[in-house]
Amino acid sequence: MAQRVSHAHSASEPIMMQTFDNTEKKYQFYDEDATRISKEIDEEIKKDSARRKEVQRRQVKVMLLGQAESGKSTLQKQFQLYYASQALDHERPLWRPVVYFNIIKAVRMILDELDFELSNLSLDQTIEGEALVHALAPLGNVSSELSRMRSKLLPLVAMEDSLASELNNGVSITGNRSGVYVRAGWQALVTPLSPNRSRTLPGSGGPPPAVAHVTNLASRTLLAAQNEVDELWKHPAVRILVNNRRVRLDESAPFFLENVRRIAEPDYLPSTDDILNVRLQTLGVAEHSFDIDLAGTRYNWLMYDVGGARGQRHAWVPYFDDATAIIFLAPISAFDQYLEEDARTNRVDDSLQLFTAICSNKLLKNSHLVLMLNKTDLLKKKLAAGIKVRKFITSYGDRSNSYSEVSEYFRAHFIQVHRRHDISRRALYAHFTSMLDVRATQSIIINVGEAIIRSHIAKTGLA
Ligand SMILES: Nc1nc2c(ncn2[C@@H]2O[C@H](COP(=O)(O)OP(=O)(O)OP(=O)(O)O)[C@@H](O)[C@H]2O)c(=O)[nH]1
Ligand SMILES: [Mg+2]
Image (cartoon, rainbow, N blue to C red):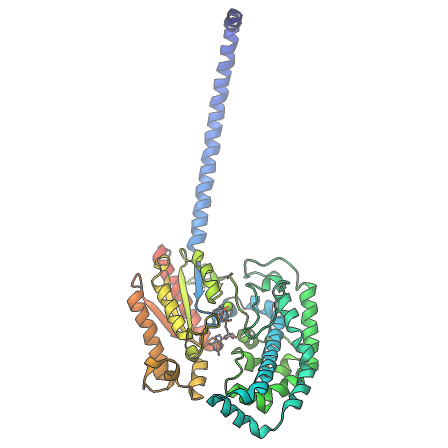
């Protein structure tokens, strides 16, 4: 067996050699070809990687950080208004259900509070309680008047959960005093495709029928109940409760309730002010993208708007290590407020703690840092209404309760945190802002935007 094989082997040797020679040539041919192709692929990979690097170098990643209700999403809208106003216009009709939702939630909260206060009035022995009894006394018995309004408002209030559930992608949420939570990027559900959009958006051609249906129903119900909404908001008992801060409405509620007749019009289209005033809690992280031109070069601006409540903050970290810049928002009007998620923590204290964590975070050591001391308009209003800072922040002591002194006091605290805890001793760019003021905010946006891009250029060596 072995021999036969050996014989067969030797007999076929020349042929085999011949074959081998040919294969060699073929291999050489293949080798040349493969080398050329491989070189081409290498070149392509290099070019592709250079292209990607170039795209990345032109990409500016900005994170908006701060506690819940600090104004992050409002700042995002202001950026959108300045750099991608077409996209905002495109979205305009889709803010309708959210505006309706804001009104309905406020009406429901007022009615709940009226019920609670009027039935517990005689039980409240505190100074505030007695003051309230005293203030309400001249109104006489308002119960029947209020219950008439309540029954007229019932169909409107009944829409809160279905509206929230549609905006919340079908997740049914029971309304409660602390508010209804709406998921991140709700536009994903109701916004048609447009350029300069959030990444999560589908390419649908308009709001799905369920959202459109519930929006139209809310619109009709509001049209029918607008007189009662107006009457309720202007009712002396409600005025007293609001002025005595017994009803804790969302900050934007007065704006919408005062504008209810305009909003109840059947052809209502949300104005820019409406869009800026709307309160919609962000859940998770929403990415927004638009282009910014600076000195003839186009930069792709990626803005990350995060949920600021304590339970949301863990979702921020994965975005930290390549963040070009952090814009930290601290609402300094919140000195008399406490966290919704922890009623013992003063909101300004929480902002200072959060800012300490951001300044000392190693992953953020190379990020450009901007601080916005926001809601200065509300701070001015609160101080003008006689609310004393020292009542809530004892260390404020006997300083004057004037806007200039109070705002400077808060600024100094944030600057001190930065000085003590900043990990890389970088510069801090601080601004006083009022995010509802379009003109003032736009000029800050231009400033901040350019400073961030310049710092990006300096770090990446881009020209
Ligand atoms: N008066 C006043 N209201 C503001 C200002 N900035 C934001 N608001 C309002 O404050 C509310 C909360 O603002 P958002 O932008 O939703 O807050 P946020 O930081 O995104 O909150 P989360 O998404 O929960 O983290 C909205 O109703 C805004 O209209 C401001 O400078 N002044
Ligand atoms: Mg938000």
